[in-house]
Length: 409
Ligand SMILES: [Zn+2]
Image (tube, rainbow, N blue to C red; front, side, top):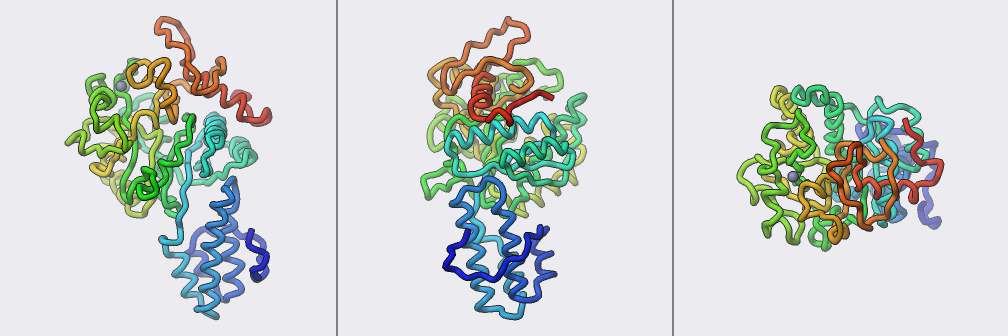
């Protein structure tokens, strides 16, 4: 906590505050301001925030307290203004994932453990809706994750047919764009596994990182090859249209720096993106754009099979920057795009594996430490578990203590 040499007024029991607006209504003296401000930053101290991150926030709030003391004895106007001001005080970054069903809780735990294993300095924040069963929420909290409840943002996709309920949940991801207390967020689906340190995705260009600018979205291509022949996939989801087919051989895509503007690759939005890994800077403006798009384009949204990623493409348009395949290594790439992720050498290039389709926790398989070679996919074998699941099971078995391991549904 704070330097013991710094004398601070006694802190009242932590009170959960909804927003600075609520805060402004109840602050009526400097002493109350002290305790309330501490309650406010107390929220941030929860969970698995790293010491450095916490220290920065403490300094930030201490700075506010000092200003309050000097400039606003007996008033609350400065407190209001400081707490309402976004930059430059808030300089935080985090990973974030969304868990709306009990089975995804194990995914979030393995993901979080994989981030720690790869020495990420940033914590994983879990967004959940009220629909998440209480015991799943408890499990996540006991694992040390911060779980925040958000209003559901369900996107009705008529086009997804029988799968519409499952895909509708993906809309909740869009809530992460409203977390404006963070400067930059990296969203990782709970069915991803981090195999190398990817903190540079959250850094900014000036610090040797590759972070996005305000109003930009970094995201990788979807694989539209549809090798599983899913009948409800959009008609235009073909091998020819796949971003990994069209652009993987070009200089703009495969070379560093890893980000390429989508508009430099294609003049239109005719290439699909996968929202499983995204880097962005939350903002009220982007949130407003998303909400307005959803409100005013209801039929269009219903015609989307993957509404969340298609809405983001509509909203961000030429502000989309393409992440290379290895930041969102869809497990099907091993089959559909062998030159990218073949059965060997380029395992070491994979940074994040994305377990689309069947989830690793749905069936037990052998465990292989990453980045060791994975068995080849045998297209003829019936009921085969995707070989890439072996890496997830290695993380599960070796990075989670026994009481946090998967016990099935
Ligand atoms: Zn493809």
